[in-house]
Length: 235
Picture 1 (cartoon, rainbow, N blue to C red):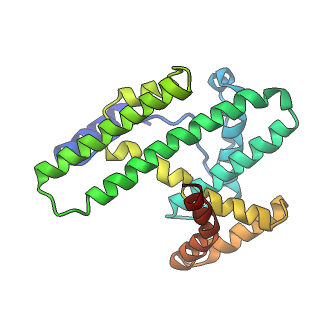
Picture 2: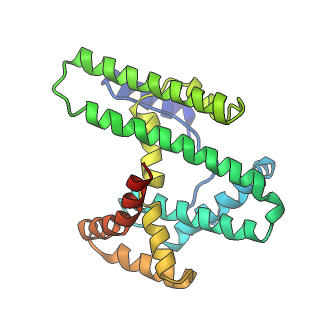
């Protein structure tokens, strides 16, 4: 929790040619080791952000696998989203603003993940270092241009993510998006298969956690296939 040490380490990695991104986190889970506090600074958050954060961090106490960040964060993200959906079904007066925020978040994430896919393809090409860097720069410039178009044409100019785009973007900036979203549709499929019964859902997820990593990955991919087919039809 020492910003100076974080920046020093970041400088060391930059000097070695790595992309680096430093950012804070508003909350975290100690997985039940301590009674994680709800800080007074959190009281200034919107209702959606505060409640969603609580659902997300408490989900980590329910299930956490060593060395599988994508599984852990996608699991917690699904619990957060489904928990919020149920909460707001009981508070319908807050739904319009929440629906708008969620749509914008999904659109923003889709832009970032599209750029990740573009860059992944570029990095497989037999290009010179200079050509690779030029293609990388162009991809980030396109991401920013696409965001500005989305903001100005569909969001009435509301700059919800202007601060994020104001920083110097690189590969490290894009990393969290895949980790937090990769398996969310798979967990949604599991929740539906459980009949929306939370205890059955958690039990199924724990069974997945007992598998070795490769078997778990294959199971998650199988759960994702209907979602991917539907997405392709939508395109």
